[in-house]
Image (cartoon, rainbow, N blue to C red; front, side, top):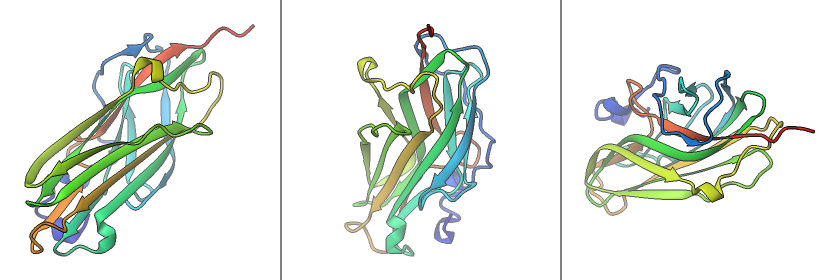
Length: 218
């Protein structure tokens, strides 16, 4: 995290990898499988997430998983470089699910902290896709200063639009997120930022599974 924000962004700074565990979530589709699910980070790319700065945890009831970041922050204004205003992260996850089941993502809840001066604007947008398939439409959310608080957005997919992983195949699940801060209309002496991280694990991104049983093979 940038030194110019080391004090003001204390509530939105480094999250120790693996310190968070998702709680029970809303169920979508069929009942989740009772077998073990494992998710590992295969690759991490982007200006907002160096390798090793993202961690994954699975809910005890297999209804969701979380992704937490330790350095994901965009900033603009005083003390900022032009490249600081836009940060992105693409994560490829290797998801192993019990045999006979497949999954889609029914809802994604994004959380973080923002401090935006009057006239500044922040943007969060995200999309996801399975390896070899087309990316979902990227959904955007904007925030306008003055703003100094936690933020949260939710992207939910209609039941008839859910995209499930192909049955019996292992494909990476790719998450593509981006944050931007525009402070051109704000006080040039002020620093505005938008973060997607936390000190205590209370702020994280939650992806809610929709489960479906695969048809029996003949």
